[in-house]
Image (tube, rainbow, N blue to C red):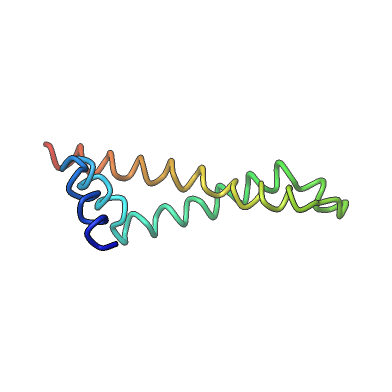
Amino acid sequence: MGDLRMLELEARSPACRSWTAAACEPAVVRRSLRVAGVVGTLLVVINYGDRAFAQALGPLDWAKMLLTFFVPYGVATYAAVQATRQAQRK
């Protein structure tokens, strides 16, 4: 299993590996989690607040609310990595 993982890592381009490494930097992860927490919460309140107050949330709604946090996390991570990479090029 370890050999397969190494082959997968070697198959990736250096640019992809460096992008992934930058996305996993603790500062990027912390910032993205904060953004996802704030923006995701606002989106959940906007999209599901009325149903939550009416106590009409089903299992699918809970799953959608959880997924709502992934979009701002992804956007914040992408923006942070791209900004970092662009600053390093200068």
